[in-house]
Image (cartoon, rainbow, N blue to C red):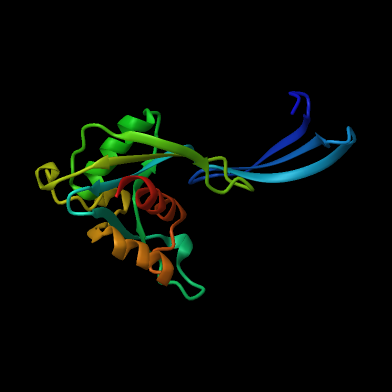
Length: 191
């Protein structure tokens, strides 16, 4: 795609409270060479990182359960089972995910391995998510985890057999996209 396929006409800030919501009007050069005027809203919440901790010997994974208000309602209780994750907040993906693991799970990991990165909701959200894996064992536990209460976190740590976690995807008990992606990665490449 050539670099000259977008002409921005107007950018309007709709909200700059929790994160930044903008409305942009632009012309887009279609594949046939014609120009089309479009308007899109984009939500900029920064980039993030997530990690699946796994124990190869026990064939287990560490996940967390926490309340996510945007998922509350329409038949869902708002509690999601997820991989540990967080926004980068000006840190490198590797440094940030190591800190998040300690805060959320109480485990300290040394080496983390990036397995891929992905845009999670590219129709409206600018976030790029960096996906990592790392091994853990009982000696890696340095605290209780649970998150940072001052940030509204109230996180339960779950250690599950990988097979059970995969069954929980099929049953709908695990419905978080990043977590499903990393559990499937583990099933195919790690355990």
